[in-house]
Image (cartoon, rainbow, N blue to C red; front, side, top):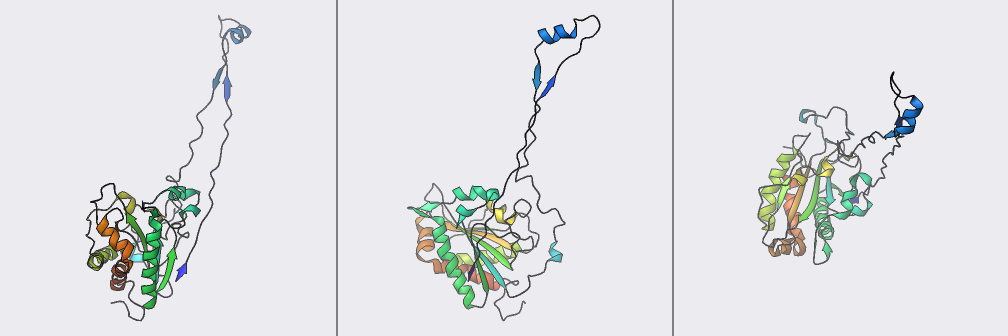
Length: 272
């Protein structure tokens, strides 16, 4: 398996704006201009500073977005990217600085530790089948391309009764194929783990930063099929027992979906 580490540094420009001084000229019948200058206070007019361009307003992918009809798989063997949610987030560049301070934990252990175990188990199973696997940290290499990308996270709640897993495709899916993989993962993950399915997804899942190639430099290529899974709730005893103590069941649920996805059949078996 190959672990890919990527980080970058961004900078924002600073602008200085000089103040403008305006006076008034005397008109016929008024006091001389010198008297006006003496009796009338000078008004300092400072225009508002230029509006700083936010990361959200920036469109770093201005060219035409490929359509699903134009999608082609990457060259080379079937490559699967497994992202460890929150792993190495402290190395995030300026545009993703918010990643340095998020993620959940249980009993003093951060979510990323559980995610890393699951990803390594999943990668090992996939490599035994002949797949090429990249293990990615929180920061995705710019314009990263693979046959399939899956971000692996865990959920949490103040309610210990909250439980279940959820999967989401990108809100904007240029490949037109991500939802097909999500549907397969729903079919395989629940039976493999015994964790119940949640029908809803969150806005943050649908707009996951790694999917947002328009806003971020460190994001997937628009032609990378992608999804994100919240494997269960660390704050729920039942879900946690599987995530923490039986990660091979979680890995099996993921691997079975990848094998069944027509774009990523096991190496040596042609696409149906």
